Length: 246
Image (cartoon, rainbow, N blue to C red; front, side, top):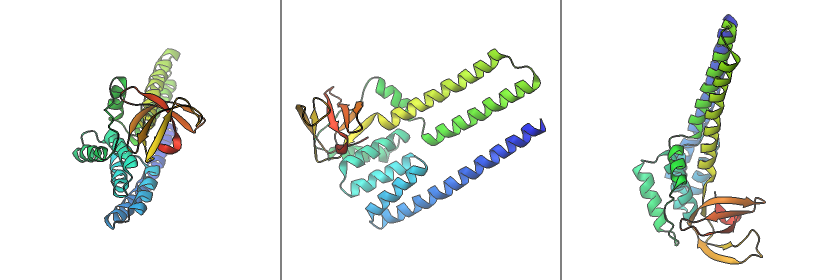
């Protein structure tokens, strides 16, 4: 039992050290990015916000990054990152207002999503990657601790352990799926004008044209160069990845 207690102390001490280093790096980048934004150095602010997002993803960073892109007249990227911010802060009034204002600058008007995607996104709005990490970290710790305790006490059965492991596995898969959907389900056109084709490849028929700021969902991809997209009005087609952000 003493060995288990020592293990738990070391486990928590190590995790706290990791979180402290991460928070310091994040706060430093965030402060520098805000200073650049205030000084009107929007390109520098963009770089620093993006660096901060490599440390941690959250709504404030996405929102500030979207504001920076809007200041550089990058409407497509600003709409994309306002959307990302809205996932993390669905009730943020400034996020919704800025997103709608950026959308008003786009030439093509795309309606909101509906159906099953709305349900999944509603779940995604309750989570973020950091919260998912904490949850999985705590869950794995509880699973490990419970298993060791039961085995130590000789009260564990194979069926009980299967139930504990199965519950942990289901929760873990759910978090991975929601985060994957949240990160990759939608995209925005960033080119001034982009052709949507009947198939992946420039030799295919042009179905229609989209302009910067057009929003869509992604249903398929081909060779990391083309994506099949679907608009809110159910129009589908293939578009070059160099013309979009997702």
